[in-house]
Image (cartoon, rainbow, N blue to C red; front, side, top):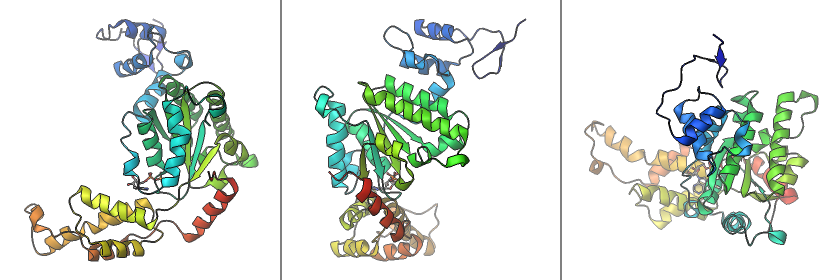
Length: 360
Ligand code: ADP
């Protein structure tokens, strides 16, 4: 017999796939590829089919396993972040609402002169809420959210990054309105490293820019958000396509207070006075949002450690045995959790913001 090759390039024994995928669309899809597709892949493709049961043009030449990866791993069905979950950043929220949420909700109004940019850059120190903003945008605009870290394209998907990028933009275009969030976008769109740059990473970058160009000109409802904490690495071509560039700075003292309160309240552990919160804020100058989260985590271990120190067995421990979280717990935690961003780095962001940031 003639050996057949499946999509993964492996040998596929000449046995018909089991008959439980007897739906019309399944068999049509399976017919188009081959019987080696497993049911989960078929299901994935089915969902992306148009009313005519045909796979959209853009997806037809892509490998099913990549489409499946995008649908299952990169697409986030429930981003689950709202504006109210994000502390501070009022300026960024306002800009983003006008620039991207309204246009996604009312494409009929935002055309012509009002047609929005399709590329947004969020830059600033790590752990300040850039990813949260991306998710909140998708949530508020009722858009499908796709999250990919650019470094995974070069590290995990060696040699396949280009194909995955095509699959990503292809699936997004079937799932409009869509928000594609590319974390660490600098690693993808960095300034050309002259001769040292690998051919493959150059091709990946080109593919990415081509895809962006594609939906930028058309009427597609796709927004690309790039996040980076190294904006200075982006080259001119990347800056040109990311037309809006918003600085996401470290949280203000009010925002830090809000994060502490919110996290403790959620667990019913909040018992601090205004004065105590104030002291915590003063001691956490320079802490990022994620540093604050780690601080609260560490502080909230205080009561537990105390109870155990008094000889209570962890298995016997009751919630009532634990005191509430105190200022002292925070002071202890401050010894463990240090700010992750140096003042030096902040200067770089300010400078880049002055030169390239959108201040509106
Ligand atoms: P970034 O993408 O800027 O590196 P993230 O959005 O992933 O940072 O934030 C990491 C975590 O830090 C969040 O899950 C959240 O718990 C906390 N955090 C950061 N910034 C904020 C903020 N402004 N408000 C509330 N929580 C925040």
